[in-house]
Length: 138
Image 1 (cartoon, helix red, strand yellow):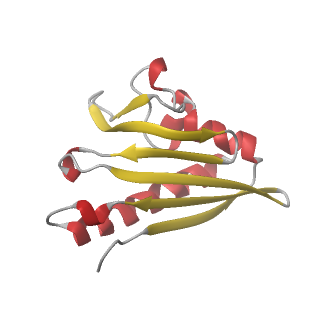
Image 2: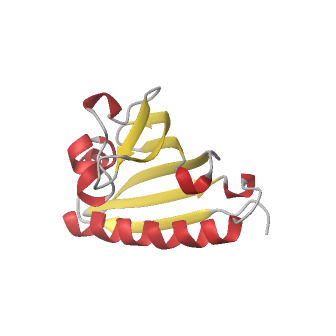
């Protein structure tokens, strides 16, 4: 397998403007994923960010590449299990009748020197769990 791509698409009963806030706002991000470490970690273009786990320690981090409210967000993404390899997470928000189509594309797993498939499986499962929580917030 070369250049594996994780793609998830869900539909949320809220406008793209509302869903956008759940992707970038420190407190709302923490309701379905992980909270930002500080107010400076709001997900805005050019910002570095760090998200924290329940113990307050960094769980994942990276740099925001694109933030075009309310339609597109992309950022580098890594954590300890990725051993310094930066992957790319992209979000596309599209208004649909009565809500939002939210598409997640996560790439870069081919950069792993070993354990690529297990990381792909782990992230596939993790995004399913997080996106289920996000959907339930609307």
